Image (tube, rainbow, N blue to C red):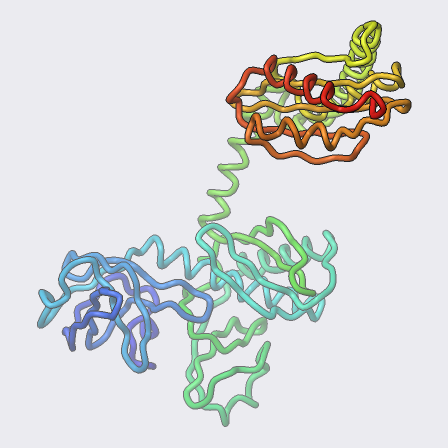
Length: 401
């Protein structure tokens, strides 16, 4: 492992090597094994490199047993002899920035709060570490971020060293290593000593910056999401664009956008409350008008009335007329919905009514003897459904109604 090119020189972008063998996985993926490689395989929380071998795209890299397999898009058997490998350097350097930034931020949490990292994930947009604590305050997050950025600004070297497990006691490691034999240490002098098989830049300054974005509870730990290096600039650009758009729509300077938005939301909540109250009054007025009928069966059909609105209207009607039944139907796009409610003086079962009319619309419904609601396909008109409901009532005995 010591002689692998990505460990010999993590800044190596291109290399030459000899094809050792080619092969095809059971799933059809074709791969090539080289005499040496600068392509990093997936492992230790760091994603694999991509790039080209003789202008053939390398789309995945995995370590299988004792060999590193480069999975390519074209026919692997076409590669032989000496080949030229070229990394997608933008991807590799991004991974190195994020991975080194994780070491720095993790060490800052340990140094300041003795808060250990128990897991790490390098995603395509953000990096996460799970910290073994119940909570992290905003002050603690700010302090860890500031300490991490101080280490970056100091541009300390990031060194690597191979040792044996017998030599581990000579180093103050941040956490125990899980491997034996040859062990690779990644060292930021006087700050962090850690066993790691990933790739990192040669100095902390190359990480550029660290910015914590958010936290969340995760299985008894606190998950911290952050970005490093070029991703900080990308995140800043995205947030600047969003903030500028919000400020433009609010017609205020960006610095006043939060205050203006809070005022707008407060106004909206007030307006929504007033609108709800106005709708309640309108429904009550509509119910009084419908309840003024001389009939004990009060029927009405509508367009685009929600089932909740029908239920409220029906309750208002029977509150006005305890001796009446309210039958309400609404046509909503490609479906029909209905509500049937009885007043306090009425004994007729609304569940029996629903059972008789639901087959007309291939529908489903539910409720009680006092009130039912249902809906189904618009295979008859709303007026025909209302008529079917009225006919179903007539079939019940006078004693029931």
